[in-house]
Amino acid sequence: MENLSINDAQEVVDKWINSIGIRYYNELTNTAVLMEEVGELARLMARIYGEQSFKSKEKEATAKEDLGGEMADVLFVLLCLANQTGVDLNQELLKSLEKKTKRDKERHANNEKLK
Image (cartoon, rainbow, N blue to C red; front, side, top):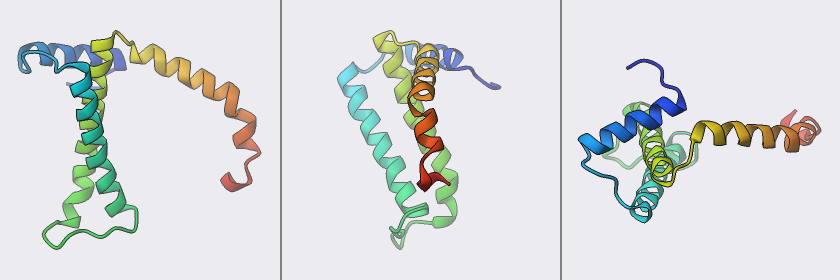
């Protein structure tokens, strides 16, 4: 597969779930799975970019390679939840960007911490 739009990604995940995955987990289970995946991503971020160190058996060299996979796992479950709840993530992202642009344009431009 090549580049996917958000809508395409939702469709691909839906097809995968309904064929390979058999069916969606319920929304509450998928929310718990999402939190688990976010935790795995957070753990790597804390070790790669934060102050936490890797345990002796962990390999720092492969951690950055694993980072993309963990992000993809988070995205996969988020796409599942969007499909299950009828959310068009493409439209919602556009609305979110519009909201943030109106709300934060001056705020960020005037934030000394960002300069």
